[in-house]
Length: 146
Image 1 (cartoon, rainbow, N blue to C red):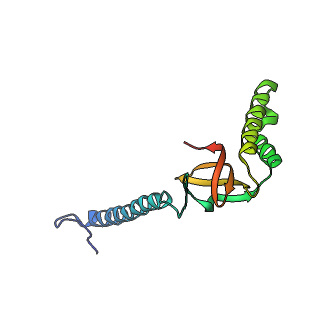
Image 2: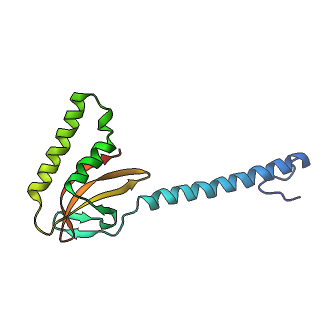
Image 3: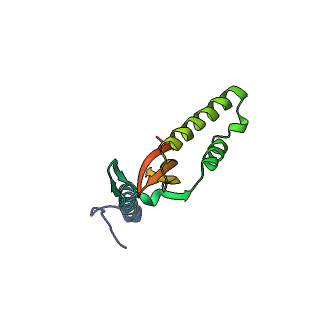
């Protein structure tokens, strides 16, 4: 019989229990190490583009969008149709103001993209961003977890 971590003098019936508990403890240590390392890896920085206004992660860009798509997608995401009239008007006014601010900053050649990236451990940030020469110039943040 294999004796893992058991002291001499342990009764024969207890040796198997002791060996089993040592194996389980070893497995738990491995699982814990994997969980800790995966948590750090999911929060690790990604290659970013240096822009005059900071760093930008271009891999978070999902798809190009139009102004009309921004409004329609946002109202669908927040389920505006299910809101009572006054709150719905407030939501619509907010997104319309954001789109107007985006329009005022856009220049010929700029692209508008929907972006989404994981900040850490299942928490996301999402929205719409105007890209000029590979760098963001204006952002409408529509989702910010924690």
